[in-house]
Image (cartoon, rainbow, N blue to C red; front, side, top):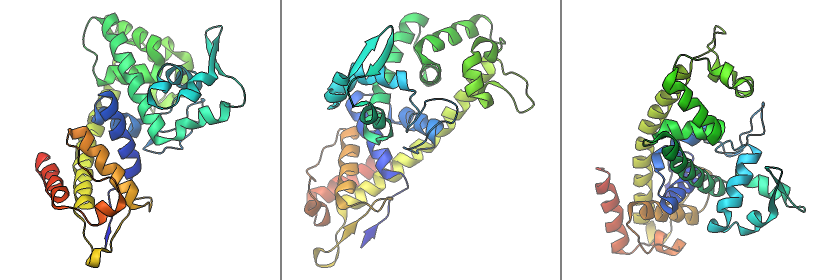
Length: 285
């Protein structure tokens, strides 16, 4: 018997884990990844150094790994990163490995969550108000300094040209800063377009989260004939990957089960099945 989950299950599992560990909203992180890369962990920008699930440019990536890497088992990477003249660099022969972490869904999701948390605190201190999801996305897109400049200028002059204020970013992201007819977009237009896109991905993420909870429940409750069963993910991965998704989902909900081995999922105990149905009930399924 085979259970086929929704697509991108492994990536969504990594995002759920990052949300659980950092407290950053799952829906926001999933929406950001959809906007940045379409949930493609190997995505690369053609106009900048941006790469990976969250399209971190090199300096932003090195900064967040240096600050938070050791908290998430990436101490070796944090130790390899130095700073000189206000810029980060990777010492020794570790550069390829450190930069390659941007394409690892778990590492990228954890660092994106930490980056969002740091930006939220800094923006709220500067703006004197709560930072919403669009504010946080602007901080990821333009950097903290750029977002502060963008939001501050928009508050006093919402019709100002975004391309005039951020010429380098406009050259690298023409569709963001210019309409299809070549006219430059205003700051308020750019902001509102991002808000609408994030709202759309939030609705999608709610549906995806419910579907993945159903998959997790199926994985935990699965029983094959004579105990012979297989659980696979969208990438044709093993039962262990399904268990990782189920456990990270339960962690996110604050409901921790005991399914830790392939055997326990393929031949679950009654309490595992009950937990699966509790998970579905929690989502109204």
